Amino acid sequence: MSPIAQLGWLVFVIAMIRRSRKKWPWITALVAVLGLVAWPSLDGFSVRLLLASGVEFGAVALLALQLLRSAAAMSENGQRLRRI
Image (cartoon, rainbow, N blue to C red; front, side, top):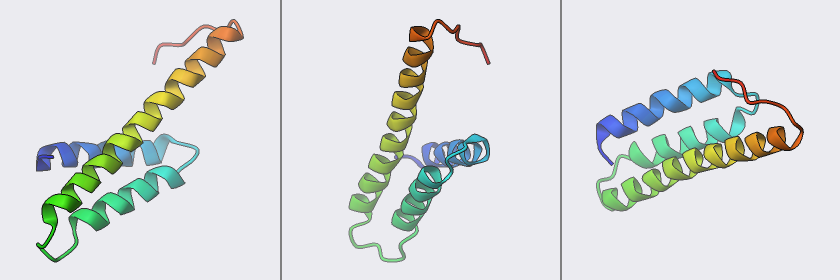
């Protein structure tokens, strides 16, 4: 993953930490990615980048799943979705 994409993900996670009620999943993902990318040894760097990209993708996928579930629950209750 390119450094620009990782910087974008970092900004996204910081925004989610500020907005979210459950902060620990985002903080855990952030620490895992920073730990994998910032490890000082260059041996296995590509593997660590691959793992970091997997953690980033997983965090965003779980957010999407949570939003889909909440939208489905709201529509079952007859509530309208609000535009943000």
